[in-house]
Structure formats: C-alpha cells, structure tokens
Length: 398
Ligand SMILES: [Zn+2]
Image 1 (spheres, helix red, strand yellow):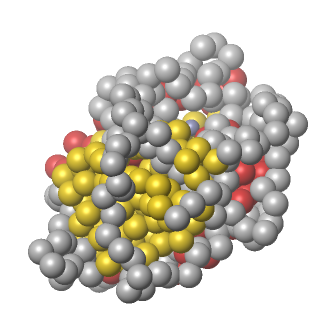
Image 2 (image 1 turned 180 degrees about the horizontal axis):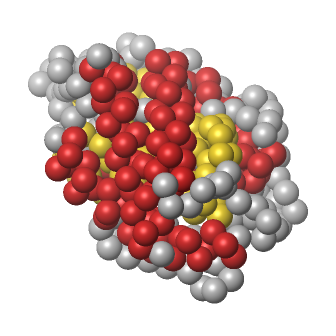
C-alpha cells in the first residue's frame, strides 16, 4: 500500500463548519493521479507511537506560510491517509483553485482561513466521504504535494507560474543574489548539548550571524536568516521562508553529535535516499523523528526532487566541505573530512533551491566542543561558509 497525504487544520480557535461546504463542482476538474509517496508500510520503531493508529482519520491542525509568490500549507493529521490533488481553472469570475481530497477524513474547524499573497485563502469542508481542502489562488501556480510522518502531515508547496517568478531551480546558471542561512534549532529546542553544556542552537546562530554580514559585504549577496535570535522556528517553516525569499541557496547550520565521544569531523548533507547508517542517524536526530521515518522521507522526496537542483546541492556541498576544512586548517590542523553524505532531512524537504545541511563538528566530542565554544573556531567556520558561497557564485556565473 502507499501512504497518501493527509490532513489539516490549523491551530487556534476552530469553529464547526456550517451550511454547505463552499466548494465548486469538480465534475469537469482534471483530477490528477494520487501521488504515491510511500510504497510500503511505514516502518515504526519501539517507542515511536504511543499505540495503534486511530481508526478515524482526523485533520488536527493547519499551518499557513504565505508570501507574494510562494506559499506552504501544512495539514496535520492523526494518521496516514490517501489523497488526490486536482486543479480548477479560473472561470465565472473565480480565480484558479488547487484542491486536495483527503479520503475518509473528518474535520471540525473553521471553514476558511485567509492566507494572502499567491494563495488568497484556504477553505475546508466535507464532500462525498472526504475532506476537501481548497486553495483559492490569485493566479496559476506550480505545486508540489508530499506527505511526512512524525508528525503525520501533508505539505502543499505552491509557487506562482508567472514568467520571472519560477522557483530558483529554474534559474540555475544565473547570478546568485540571495542566500538563506538557517541556524538550526532555537528557543525550547537546544539541539545537541555538549558535556560542558554548550548548546548546538547557540553555536549555529553565532556562526550564521558571523557569516551573514560577510556574505552581504564581500559577495554582494543578500543573506536572510531564518532566525536572528534564540527563538523556535518549526522545521516546515524554514524552507517556506527560503522559498518565499526566492533564495538561490539554502544552508542549514548544525553541530553533530553521537553516542560515542569519539565521533568527530565536519560533514555536509544533502537530501536524498541513503543506506549510510551514519547519515541516517544524523537525519533522525535532526528531524527529531525515527530512522524509519527519515528513511521514508528521503525515499519519497527522491522521487519528486528536481535533478538539476539536486546536482547543484551536491556541488555546493562539496565546495562547503573543501572551503570549511581549508579555513579551519589554518588554526586547527587535522580536522577530519567526513565528506558529503545524503539522507532524509525534513528541513531540506521542498526547497526550491539547492539546499544543504552543514554539520560543523561534533559537540559530543570534548575536543570539538571546546573548539565550537571558541570565537576563533566559529569565525573559521563562518569564513568557510562565505568562501564556499563565493566559489559557488563564481562557478555558477562562469
Ligand atoms: Zn541540529
């Protein structure tokens, strides 16, 4: 069996839908084939679930990240589900619409939510044994819909199909003008914590804050941070912000950790399926989900990812490894090159642009924790990021 997407509604006050669902007839709608994101049982590990899946499929929450030309809608569910995606062209004074029918789902919440930008609003209602989620669009869009487990959620990414606003993947080979630096974790999520108490979230933010002004000043490239303070930002929101920024590159900054204090070195990850046990463990930790869920994510995403963008991600990851090790070696010889690896990282899923996750050293290793605590080491890491972007920019514009 395969797992389709599911779910839905957003936090906050829910009112019971009243009257007839505000949906148009879909008889003539070109309903697309269901998207087979998962082709097998979703594996689980002991402790992953508190019990059997609920029998009644329910939309539990909805998150909306809208912008002028892109949007991400996240529909949370209490269990996996099947869904179909369809589109309606503009007609009769109504704009184009994108809809999802979530089979056998129930929903008890507000019947519509405003978003703004390319997605004007979302409407929900029951229809023929399903819950239909309709996105009222300002204009035609391209869309990508995928399902993620732990927690179960359906992600709907849309981007304006208007000329000149295509996702960055379509702009590869042109000038690099915007970069997003994503400082991992934050707020109530400290990330990994070293033996002396150093927190991953603080190192990641400091390196991002060191690199951003250099990127702007030395490279003439706009740098956007997904967070500038010690605040929590959901994983699903980070790439949504990068997509909205129409970024040409997404760099997520993290510190590695392992059960053994021996683990050490610098690694860069891209999103793809993997049998690399080390990479799978890193992804599970960063996703705060099981290895099985992370594996399924990678498998699903590898089927829908744009190959040109994936290749560019690997190319930038190699530059980042080389540049960061060169930078570190000036003061810290012998830092181990853990190479470029691939696995299923939630934070990279759905990025319109080349995207990597940089594990800057092991906070669980006493020697590397000490280094990660020092301003000098952090500056070397930031310089490595800047130099990698410089090399990528030169290579792309060549
Ligand atoms: Zn992390």
